[in-house]
Image 1 (cartoon, rainbow, N blue to C red):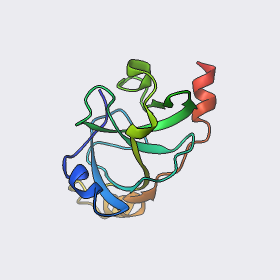
Image 2: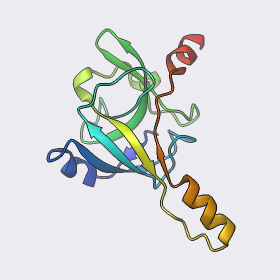
Image 3: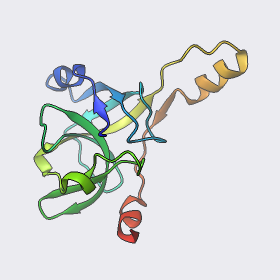
Image 4: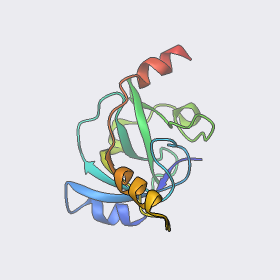
Length: 144
């Protein structure tokens, strides 16, 4: 199942170069989790290993988040970080360049009802993190 983004993402995309997106689904676990809020840099240059937001090739009203594994003729080969979730280029092939909309720069994990001081501190230390490119993504792909 592809990692979907909220409909608010599409409305926010047109006005500013940066905008929020909310993640639903498990395909990018452990990097991203259901409920994470992303800061997306719309129109940013994409390199292998970057986490990107794209239009689903067969359902273009659906926005998904994947890792750009490799540039190929015709576009990008994208993969989810959770190999068991599916919904990536292994299902639908190369994604045309024009369907890749932006690069994820930051991830915020909202607090989920923690009560003990230890869990609140642990959440505070991990709530906001940059989403870095995994430069080994294309090497992992070739090794399969």
